[in-house]
Length: 134
Image (cartoon, rainbow, N blue to C red; front, side, top):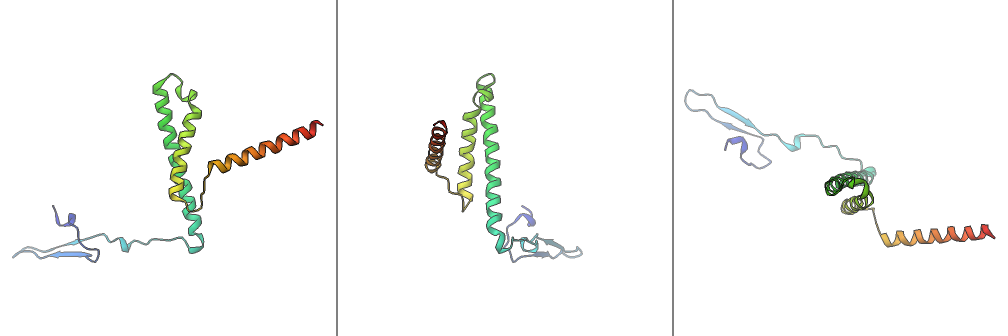
């Protein structure tokens, strides 16, 4: 194990190794993470930044999960990816929602609430259709 591979506290910036008689010493410098400039989003935009990142991670997980399901379906049967498109999409959506729930502070996903809203909307459409018929 060389000197540069060893773990030192963050306060250690460099080590000077003195040379023996007639030999020159050497200096080992360490990269300091504090020396790199980290730009933070201003306080006003941190929430937006966090949510955009969460959405991006979820989208990436959706496509990754879909490709895995797509490949698995193609291995099972001929044209399997086309036959199982709906099932594959639902599984990928579930994976994306899981990632989004873990990374987002705003996202609140309640499938039953969404179902109730859809049913209510369809009932309203049905009522309007019956009114137009009369």
